[in-house]
Length: 567
Image (cartoon, rainbow, N blue to C red; front, side):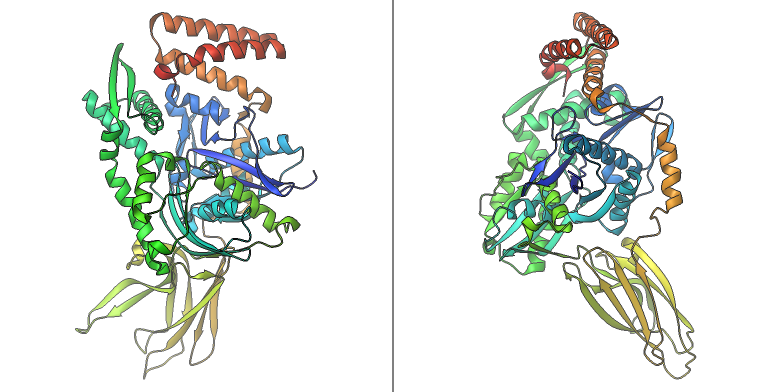
């Protein structure tokens, strides 16, 4: 293969990569043979681990390991690993680079072009941070695709002749999206999107972690980093187990004492009710924006690993009086759809009969002032020009007045969001419009905003009395990376020692052995220490067959410790 664009689901908890091959999207396995690569990075002494090996170190090296950093994309947050500060987009770029490496090994060609999925409710700042991460990973971002749209593509590519109106409920590790789409004659049209960029499976894990602390009568704030990480890991295991079982027992060793906590599905669901209520808000907003009745939807699709929880499926069923569908693995749908979008972008002939349209997930408008009847003026109000869920591309205009006839210029600030106050929305850009001298009446300015499917915004202000135009194109926000920025950031990360891909499975096992050793006590701990020494010796011998044989034996023994020591 000489040129294959790939699709990546850059997730909060796990990430996946897929490609459109022989007329269908296919997932690409990592070096361990898994499709899911944990979105976790661990750095110590300039040694870099990404994926499963890094996740194993969340318990043993919490201060040198980072997870869930997708939630901080587009912020000024930084995480210190190995004594060095990294931004969320730096860490995301390391995950992207790992997925690219897996794709190149599987496809046997160099990978450059990529389509990356983002939550539909990501604002422009968060989307720009994702673009930055792609640049740092050496990838050419063809386009971003909203996660629910990607999931719908994964379903729709097999049902091109269907005429249906459906809703996608996408609950991932850290974000929640709801999208209503209509499909007819191969055209997939997004009607409305809504969501919450800070709601996901991790919040349900947090609920269980707090339940564990309550049963132990240990205040969370007083627990050390290692114990907090361990409790989170146990809570995550319990969350998965409680999807199948009515109760699950968590075992914890604290100060050489073993504690057993019984968690019930009923208690979990009761404690998670506030999160379920939060999920209803985007659903209701999406239905309101389309003007549809719940009964007008033909299908409900569930996407994202967190939708496996029975409470989520029951809530969706009650809400729509319809059983949801999950024919495609909820963890896989977005990556498969991203691969379809990548093929569409490269004009793959197998998809000539498919067209996808999208909408603006947020309203776009300007900062205005409002004069009250008593003469007082309220500043910092948001006047939307392109409303949320407007089909793209879109072009809308509004006429605004200067505050008084003596005003010589107007500062025009463009915002994205839904709040009535610009201070609570996202600033996209600003420019100044010069006004002619007028003493009799205030000047009028016609403001035109054009928004295309790639996310590019063009703003044009026309002074009505003179016809003079001023404007700007918002293609990348102020925090977009220049070539110099990319070079400087790459230079910092070049110092990291990346393990060869064929050694990844060994690193994952070593990390797992070390974690179980630190969690265990007594004879078990001694046994694990012997296993570590045995595996180190085999690795030093460099005999691939012997390494594979011993690794298999050790993995079988480790599996026996899963319930107590491995999450």
